[in-house]
Structures are given as C-alpha cells and as structure tokens.
Image 1 (tube, helix red, strand yellow):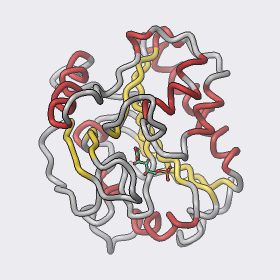
Image 2 (tube, rainbow, N blue to C red; image 1 turned 30 degrees about the vertical axis):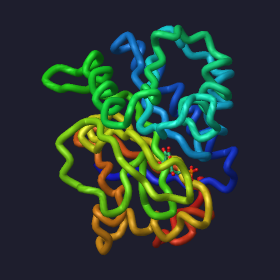
Image 3 (cartoon, protein in one colour; image 1 turned 90 degrees about the vertical axis):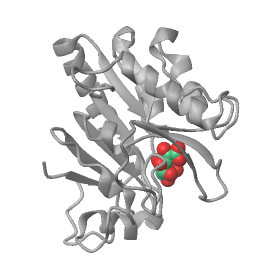
Image 4 (spheres, rainbow, N blue to C red; image 1 turned 60 degrees about the horizontal axis):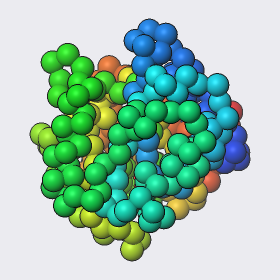
Length: 246
Ligand code: 6PG
C-alpha cells in the first residue's frame, strides 16, 4: 500500500495529529478486537505525542504497550526508552502494570531478545509467533536507521527480535530491536520525523536509488497494513515534488 506523507509546519502540530491518529486507532481496535496493541519508539520525536496522550480519553485498561526497540540501560537512565515513556506518559495514566511490556534490560542482550520474543508470543496472532500490532510508532535517525535497524545490518532477518550493537551519536550501543518481520505485520506503522538533518535520508526512503540495506527505514512496508509518515517541514524539505503542508 502506498505510504501517506503528511508535512507539518510545527512540531506541536505533528504531535497533535499523531495523538489524534493514536486515539482513533485505539478506539477502533478496542471496539473491534477488545484491545489495542501498540509498540512505542524511543528518540525525541514522540515525546510531544506522549505528553498529549497522557490527557486523552483512552480506555487504558485495554491497551498493551510494547517497545519497537530498547537500549540496554536501566529504566532510570535518561537513554531508556521505557524510562522516558514512563516519565511523560505511563506515570500519568490508569494503565495496569501487567499491560506494560518492557524489554528486560537487566539481562544480557541475547537473553533480553529471547525473553522479549517470548513476551511477543503470548500475544501472537493466529499462525504467527508475534502479534499483529494495531500501531507501531517509529522514528528515523539521520543515517536512515529505524528502531535499532542500522545501515549495513542484515536485511533478511528470520527472527522477530534481535540483539544489536549500534554505533550512533555516542548513544547506548547494546540494544534489542523488533525486526521487519514484526513491523511489517502491523496494521499501521507511523513514523514521526523532525529536523533538517533527516531531510536527505527521508528523500532516500522514497526514491529508487537507495537500497534498504543503506536506509533501513525502507524495510518497513507492512504487508497488509498502512505506513504513515508525519514529518516537519525541515525533515520534508528535500522531498520532490514537495507536497504542500497540511
Ligand atoms: C531509539 C529509536 C530510534 C529513534 C531514532 C530517531 O531508541 O534510538 O527508537 O530508532 O527513533 O534514532 O530519534 P530522534 O527522534 O531522537 O531523532
């Protein structure tokens, strides 16, 4: 299915639109399937969204929260994706603790990946070893990485969760990430991307010249679901033809 690209003038408009989509998807999933399965991302782009969600009318008892990737640091570390979501969102909403499925960062990376694969299996869709997420939130680094799928990493991964060692902006290197096997079974993948430093890679996502080995965000193409890109004007500035802001 063709990706949807929406370009916003301001980061807060982008967050508001993402929050609207989140609420709409949660409401629909709960109505149709009794629960909403969402994978959060790390990075700075979703923080505005998380703050807004804390005030939204969502039946949090029916929401299950996972992470698309995690850095192997304790939750108290500011680089923890779980920790940052806990501070701005999870602490402020009535969600049962058993609905929060964080990566066990106290384990070694391979063991943490195996443990998370087991957690995913508990929510598996028929004939799969992982759930069909209603929503996966993703970001993109300036090198085109998404979740913790970095340029040059193997494209044909056969595991739903893997341990990786990353070398990116001096950030924590040991990570666990879901793979495209899981992301591409999602009903909706939503990328939030802001900043001029992402413009060239973002153009690369949509052109035919760059391989998905070079730009891992290209690997995210849900088989039956949708991909939506919400980007700010700076990130979208190299897209051609430049879609008008909305
Ligand atoms: C992580 C992420 C990662 C992130 C991008 C973009 O844990 O590092 O999930 O893939 O989304 O690096 O991050 P920014 O939004 O901070 O640019």
